[in-house]
Image (cartoon, rainbow, N blue to C red):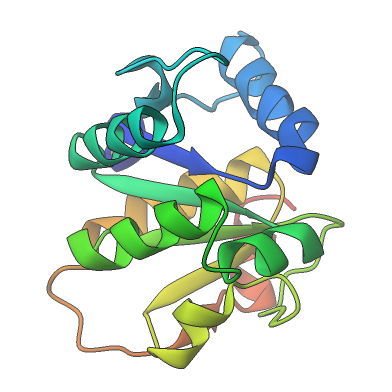
Length: 169
C-alpha cells in the first residue's frame, strides 16, 4: 500500500501538534494508519546551521515518495514566503514532482486555497485536499499518490462526499 511508503509530512512550525497527532495515529493499534516517516532520515539539531538544515531537508525529500502537507493558514503563509524552511520544502517537493495530499486542519473536505502555499497554486500543481482524518489521508495516499505520476491533472482537487461516506466518515 502506498501510504506505508516513505511519507514526508510538511507543516508550519506552529502546527507541530498536528504532526504529533499523526504520529499518535500511526502508533495507535486501533487506528488503521501507518506511514514510514521520512523525518526519521537525516536528522538536524537545533544548533545546525541554516544551510545544513536545508541540505538535510533536501535529502529527506529525496528519499520520500509522497507528501502530506498539513493545510493551515500558517502553512500557506510560510510555504510561500520564500524564506522559511517550509517554503524551501515546497520548492523541493515541486522540483522532485512528489504527490501532495493537503490535510486540512479544521475538517474541511474542500480545496481551501487559504491553506495551500501560493507556489503550488501559481504552478497549478496537482494536489488533493482532504479533511485532517486518518482514514481519508490513508485513502488519498493509496489512490491519488499511486496514480500521481501518470496523471495529466493540474491544480487542486478534492474528494466528493461519496468517498468519505464509503470510508464511514
